[in-house]
Length: 125
Ligand SMILES: [Zn+2]
Image (cartoon, rainbow, N blue to C red; front, top):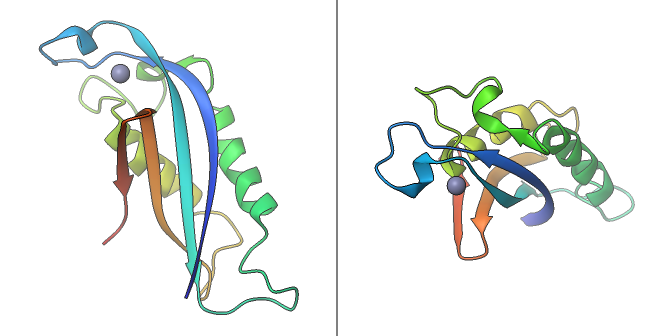
C-alpha cells in the first residue's frame, strides 16, 4: 500500500457563532490543508497518482476559500460553523469528486491545520 501526501495553504477569516470566548470574534488563520491518497497499484511510471495532479485539484478548491470570510460562504452558516473540523469535512467531500480517484486510488483523509500546533483529520472511517 502506498500513501502520498500533498499540502497547500490559504488565508481566511472566520468567527465561531455560539462559541463562548474570543474565537467568537472575527479573526483569521493561515490554514494548511493536506490530502492523503492511498492505493496499491502504481502506473507504468511508478506513480500512484501524479503529485502535481492532486495538488492542482487541492489548490483549485482552496482558491475558492482564499482571502474569504468563511462564514459567508456555502455551506457554512451559524448552524455549521467554519471550524477546522467542518472545513476538513467540506474539503474531503469536494476533493473526493476528483476524476483521478478510482478503485485503486482513494482519498484517505484531509488534514486541516489552523495553527502549527492544532489540526484535525477527517476520514470516512
Ligand atoms: Zn479560528
